[in-house]
Length: 90
Image 1: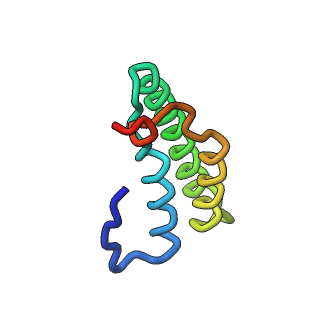
Image 2: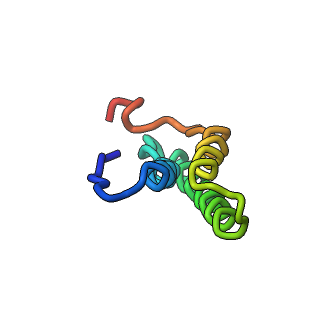
Image 3: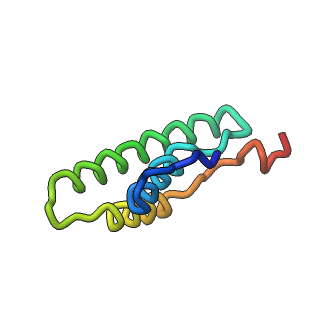
């Protein structure tokens, strides 16, 4: 996970973009079975991201900050459930 310069972005936008990046930038798995779990989780997180953006664009009362927090919460309910390369020492 790399820090990219975000000059010119509002804090709320940066928060949402960081939540999106974190939802998709999952650690690599140590096994083939883990690879399948990683891809499944990334796909599920992509659906959560699209739903969050759709909510933000659809409802006038939605705020970028609240959508970012909700996205983080939703992603947090489904943590990485496979052994990562880092955990396996690879």
